[in-house]
Image 1 (tube, chains in turn green, purple):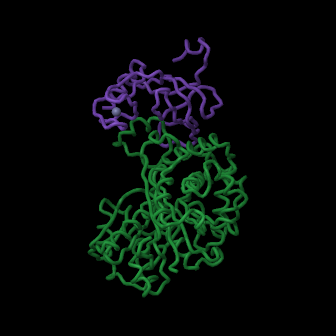
Image 2 (cartoon, helix red, strand yellow):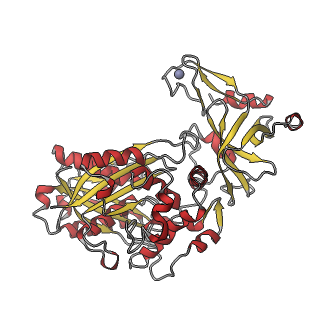
Image 3 (cartoon, chains in turn cyan, orange):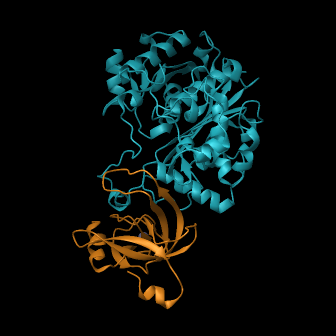
Length: 381
Length: 129
Ligand SMILES: [Zn+2]
């Protein structure tokens, strides 16, 4: 456990905004600080990425800050879960007092995301992968799904259940991109356009603008602020690969290590978690992560999510915002996992609130199952 | 450094790096052995036999020049390393099927290693391209 808490959380505008990245960043930061009852001049630590070559410095300049601690590890979607760990350590070590972790992307408005993804031609693996034309990251997740189904005899329908549950949650979240649409069925997912078999468009996350910010400070100081503190109980991370051939077993991810470290640090076990926000870049990501984190055994995640168990009213609520599949996915979704976890622990989630949630897990995944980071959060008891 | 791999494909030879210190084989090529940290490595021919670790049929072109659908796969070589490749031939693909390397000519005389179903009968291997 750490003596650090999240005291503010907010989203930027979401969806199709027509705004710049820095406008979305500014929205997120000012809203999260207002939520915390703090002001810009209180901020002396800043963590962000995805803005420019010098992301944290760029955002600090834009906000008019001169932070004494910054962090910009680039690890795709899970960077923000990593930042929580680094921020907790920096605050406990006394390097800084109030950290803002922020993110913003206008990828939908700017049409900067393509299905082919980003191929970095200068990497050593590129010469051995690009000639074969995999969709990056889509085809890697597709191969993980195929291997997973083969290894454990899991039916294709089990993957679809993840998307169905996400949609059901999104229908309860007015901020969700798919709010106000119709429920999704397993048949809908399977009959959607095939992109990289066995995965269809409905197995893949949204492409939207979006962003958010969280504010962290010491637990002692948090207790004097306007919101109930959300304690940072544990964290862990593991990076495994950039190439598509480095990982021996596609069904075993770095979540095994990041989760075990987070639970050990928190002194908790998976059974203690009341609500989980699990990166859902693709449906398969959730199944592999549930197993990696120890919520069920290898090959059991299909049964674990079956019959709406992770949806509204289910025994184990997952991705209560609607997730990257149906709520929002701004390229790097990990910041918004934290925002939803905080809101669940504060009891602010209205129709989608998990009653009495006291321990929440946020797990980010970056790249092609490349980077994994887990954060455990809890109410201050 | 990866030139050695591609030059060997002119003669339709599949080579992967082997560590002179510990014998570990690895792919893609690197300046050190990921098993022992040794820096003396050679390119050693491999059998060209393997199994399908996993595969996916790509239905959208990632860039001009690709004509979907085609089958991208991870093939686990008999010698250990995993290659990203294509599966070719009229096969109803499944994980763990045995495969054998085949060669797709490139305009400059090199070849792209791809894999087709490996059959046990002599006739098929005689016609292997
Ligand atoms: Zn070695």
